[in-house]
Length: 203
Image: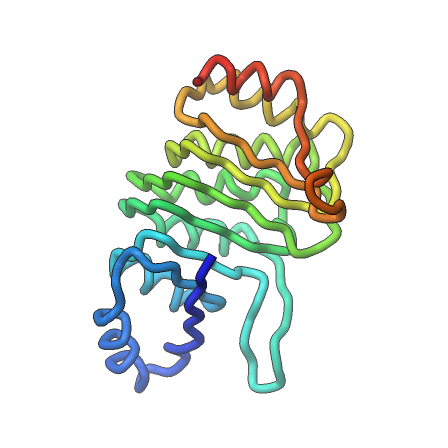
């Protein structure tokens, strides 16, 4: 996708110029932010296709990596509250707790996302519990497409995703993209009979 990166709004003195720059951009273009204040501003300005690189943090010494704490997950939810996005991509290393997206759900009242992508930038594996949390987030946001990109999946993870979506009686998701990024295309695409059955019911 054609990403337009914004690494601004680190100081109060830049806010006016940053707001003017955002105001001139078409609301339908992809914007990528790697700082929470920038991410929340992009959402507030009504952009419809947003990527938040939550694992990055710009510092004077360079770029550091960090995980999503429960507080950070809540802040993401607050930024999304009431917003309607065509696409939202969240890149991360890991969550503080496997069910961390439940904190996002609690704060994102009224949010709607057409396509949700969860992209892991570490070697941490997806577990059944983390996949269930992602399922609950996608269901809450009313997604029609869910993509999960990770380098490893614990045994039972795909079945757990299918079971949770079924338990929720989800009817909005009609497309899944479960990708093992450690494998070359097209072998990177993962599936499971229970997920195939779930999609067949929804289509």
